[in-house]
Picture 1: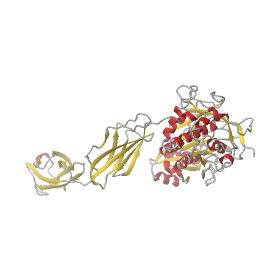
Picture 2: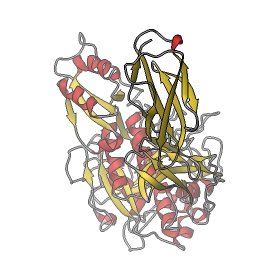
Picture 3: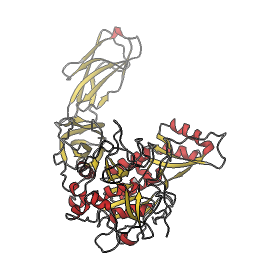
Picture 4: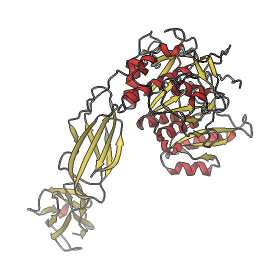
Length: 566
């Protein structure tokens, strides 16, 4: 089988694609959009416009993919951006596989100088891996040759079925660099011999794919328990749906590794440039930057590590192809190292894996932030073992609360990895979480009365946890209050009028107020003294009098109205 070379994404995406105007659009042309939504009203709006909406795992990102005739796309985008139920609208972008088309392909089975370059033999003396699940989000993976027994059931988001076979060749090559079975007397050795490959097809036979398919693939892989997600694809345009998918994977505990791209440029490529993604550049001979690899320049430091980018890999025909260039093939080397680290340190989180890969790298120049990866050294890197710290949480112990309350962990700090998330539990039940300062989670106490245990579990990115707790009193019952003595309703009043009252509440009343014509004119803390008001200060008719009581939780009750004249 002759493999067709795949070009790397170079100019595929340049920000948001232009939207054709009705005058210029082909009547049959369609535009694919991504719509982030706050609630179902946005979906109803889309449906009413006659656009074709596609359901899928993007629901996890509160987003949907929409296809609309191009001549109507501008109108729909404008309407949706004015819809308060819509959080964002963007044109779906295309990504490409991040490899370089070889000029002179050369078969050389077993010749893998990249193995020694990053110190795999010394790492293999410690571990050759385990059943760590590494997702290859790519053109698919064909289980042949050295990948026999290494590939799990996957999914094809391009064709919408459970057959993620590789019809381009790229994904299988990537997978072979990660998990080709080694030390078996045949073929090649992958970085993590015993890792499991989870194949997720998001790129078509030309190596192209929509951001929505890539996002679907990332979310799906995270849900399948992938500990490492390899993305040997990219392009220069930022994308909200792609960013959200990467954040989803991080929250699910997966390390995301992405190719930096092959434009020989310092222009950021996505998804590699996102925070909490290991962006991988390529070396050629020794520590020299490969001519095609993207790089850091000045303060634009987004390429994290480098790995050999001219390698031998196995194609879907089971044959071996030497001198295959591209950051596409640097990224799986790093993903394989992460698999080895996860094997050696099963408790390591995705942050801990990232830290091990980055801190063990050998500096090779300013074009890459940390340097060239070292598999053996990565196994020796420790992790953050100190829980986050906080002086406490609000509300304070014993506070009376009612309605919706914001529970906040105060002045959170972490000595190394940083805060990942704060989860609120109410009487042991998860009620919500946050990962942004000031780390407050809203809880609706409606229907609760009596003692309630609030606890906040604070996790850092290395998995350490600090637990804070408070007992509060939920009080959602309004106090009782009534007027005990006052002029009869609808009677004539004059001079100084006295209004006597009483009230009660299980947890105590904080204050009473006299309302005259809806305005609070006096406040008392107790019922010891009556309220008074001078009749002549008010209109001759329709003088409305009430007493209002507040309990310690802030619940309010007001008496019925007495109406007077003078």
